[in-house]
Amino acid sequence: MTRVFVHHLDGNPRNNDPGNLRLVDASESVERAVFATAFRDVGEALFGTSFAYPLAFDLNVNPRVVQRWASGRMAIPDGIWGELAELCRSRRGLLARVEKKLRRMVAP
Image (cartoon, rainbow, N blue to C red; front, side, top):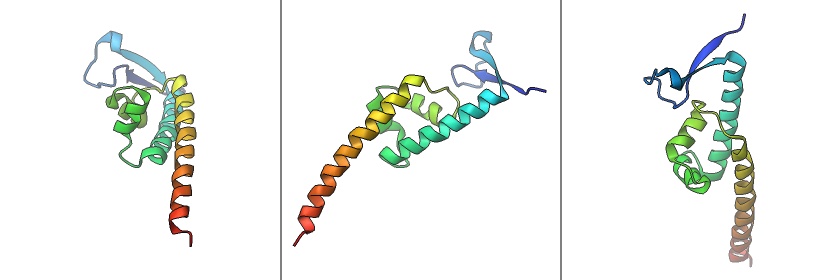
């Protein structure tokens, strides 16, 4: 037996307009939860626990969208993963330069 859930496309559980509702099977719900966890992990690694606003700025999306992705209420578009990888790459370079400066400051 397949379990089916109702998904509100706009993330608002009070909006029961038929155009806003979609049936989601349990496997899709689990997949979305896994992606949301990975998304939160990346957001926290980049910006700490309050990552929604700075990540939204870098992704050029509304902070509420980031919050919905992080909670699993809204599916994360495929293109976002590439943008997150690029943010990680650029942060890695920035952190390497900062670390180099710090090491020079404490070197004898």
